[in-house]
Length: 220
Image (cartoon, rainbow, N blue to C red; front, side):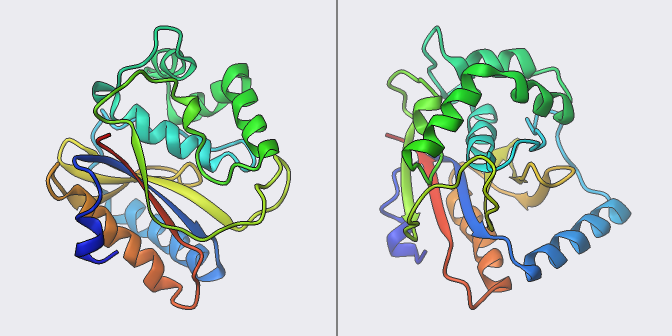
């Protein structure tokens, strides 16, 4: 994730998906972070699209939904896009209501399950069903190979989150958490570098771990 490698990523970048191991150290940090934010508060814009995760092993799908939903203005969806309809239907819902709606949304559920059966270990981009767009290219910044994709009910210790720029603030969107995490100010020009700094904090908390993967949604 050094500057020379980051300079090769097409710009602008509108979202970063981070895959990381859920370890005991991370779970301790997550609990402490939640307690701190509840006590101190934080600014979260009402325009941030956030949903909870209630489906097992669906963090990649939810991470992709978070990435696309918070960049709807940059996407050219097909007229019959499954994801477009889901986003339109759920826009006025609460994070909990969106999670429940996804549980019953057959088209996305089938895509998610078929991806798992086919061995997909990264968010399945065909879910988007977008036309050619200036913001629909996925670039893997670094990756670790996995032997297989988990089944719906298999217990896994890897998790996807999305990092997005909404209104000039960098938000971490994780369906396992009760709310978005505001990581401070950012801009279209500095978003990738700012997101990488957040990713590095995850890595620093578990210096002995190697299972990290960052995927940028960027200009084609």
